Length: 121
Image (cartoon, rainbow, N blue to C red; front, side, top):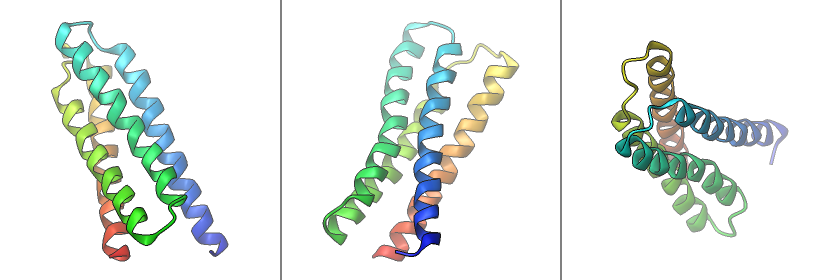
């Protein structure tokens, strides 16, 4: 692998890590309603799974395993977006702004993993 590819992998690994961290910080700011608690748990799981599966993809033993892990990354990014759309921010502007930013990031991650899949298959 070339140095550029390693840097790209590291950057995406870091980006997925930061996404999961930002989601966790965001979840702490949500109003504590029953729905937000349940949706927040799902959101935290999905957001962490994006990066964890990307690490697994980079350690995969076969192309088939790599493709499967990248598909899971894309699926978990899409699921994160779903939970972000569901949580209620009580119209607090700073919390709502962060929610929209995280929705944008999950969408971008979905597109990145989709592009990786197209190149891999």
